[in-house]
Length: 301
Image (tube, rainbow, N blue to C red; front, top):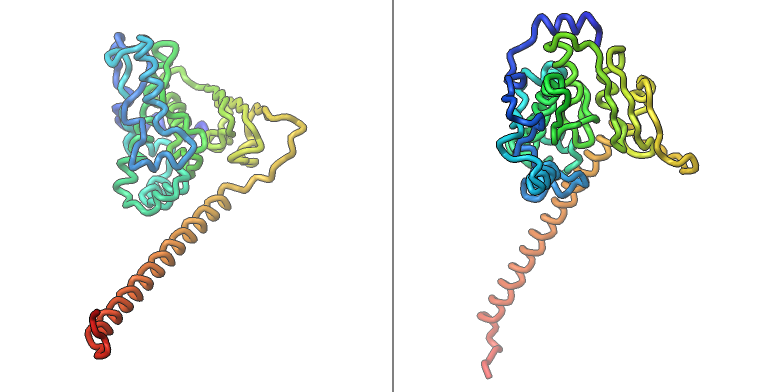
């Protein structure tokens, strides 16, 4: 991301609702009930708690820290908003359920029509992404801000993964660079146990963004290419722990697809065996009935 590209972005900034003014009566805490993903229990197939954001808000309300009236309601990021960072090609790929199943690591999504995947999975993630962008502007205006959701640090401009479909961190920083006067540098402090390879890839060549990432290098995603461009990173694991060979993300995706194909093949085999046994049972029953009617030696007792 060069300085020239950034200047061009400032001249061509699109109209967005995400930078609308927020009443001073609201705390700079951004949330929407749409953040929470619930659909036929599929969200429980991933260890990531897809309803944790609502639980956080419920706790804060119970402790009387916030009310419905004094928090900022997040808005969904539009396609124009997303195109500030994402490529058109990547956004089009999200219209395929198999791609979303791979990114979210929830295989059954593969079998759902994409309009349901968009409504039940991607819309909540787009709303959280909008919340992160809104929180960025609020932080400049108020001195601090929190988006209860977001933080999709595995997603970059042209690839997603690890339950991260939109690069909300990169988007928030890009919006600030393009729209807020005086913002020319940013720092990302990433303390999640997993490497934030998404924002690391997005800011590979941008010296305006300082990244400090503290993570366990023995677990997902193991992105060595992104790591070499981070200004400061720390491995929080024990030095005595044996090193685990990480599988590259692309290979992981291929393995997931192969697993899905094997699952589909297994379902087809089960269906075939069921149909075959049903036919055999019907033929046997019919044969027994015919034998009862036509056997002349049969005499009832």
